[in-house]
Length: 144
Image 1 (cartoon, helix red, strand yellow):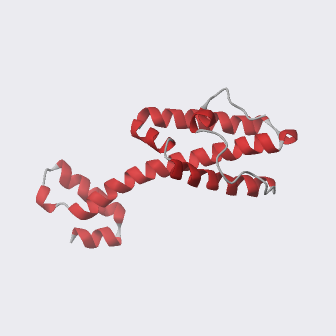
Image 2 (image 1 turned 60 degrees about the vertical axis):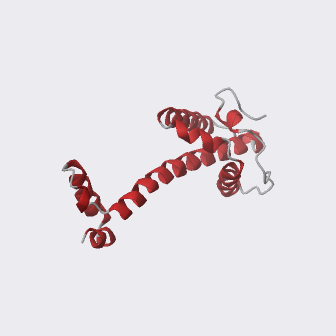
Image 3 (image 1 turned 90 degrees about the vertical axis):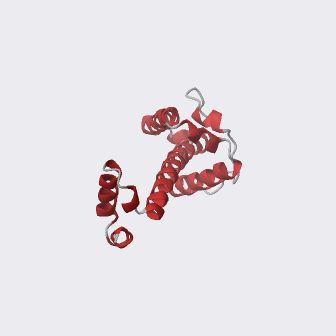
């Protein structure tokens, strides 16, 4: 019954699962889908970090490659993304491991390139990361 509800209305299913957990009705829980949803929460948090890093890197690329167009808006986006990412890393320390994952950083870099190319019309950005995660997140770092 619960697996069917999961397929039909995941919100109603999640409310029902939370009630069963609070009532300690372990045998009534939809264990497989519950485990999948818990894993998805972790993936979602990691996706959010990647998305924020991509926006941050895209703005750093724009900052470096279009110095004549630098604006307070770009700087504000850089600052807000750094602050939000730092806050998230403080609340979810296990996310820090993503920052040292070269494959993950390459994916984030590629997402940043899509944003930067779309925003600028330029296509001559580096294909590989040119800054470390530490540089990207350093509040004092702005590329020349």
